Image (tube, rainbow, N blue to C red; front, side, top):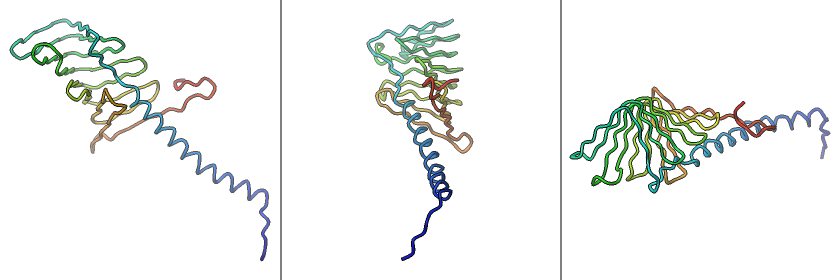
Length: 184
């Protein structure tokens, strides 16, 4: 049986090849972990806290169980704020909010997260927010875009859907090793 001696340079080359395979895989896993952190941080709509809505105009339609807010709408509850041009609030039996539809330059801000789009629909029944019209969600410096973004409020889950014209795009930035922050 013949034995081959592996030269030192060949051994370093073999280690280097393995690192070039491992580094991209590790970076992909890091990206997946960061995307999961976007889904884990929920937008919390607390039924026990009041919602304060301010706007330029308000119209109440009692027969339709509908209140319409128009012009520089700002809806605040605890640690989240929704901004839009118009907000339609539908009530169930005139008491609890059944559905909220925000239209025109919609922006939802909660701590270090911002969700934007042209339309946002919140439904109490499935406790979800659906963003459409060039929707995107930003957390720190990470961004996710698509054709439609659904955020499930009671689950650590969000769904980003694309289309033929508007594919899903995620930009995940690595943390700075020295500071531990994402944004530079």
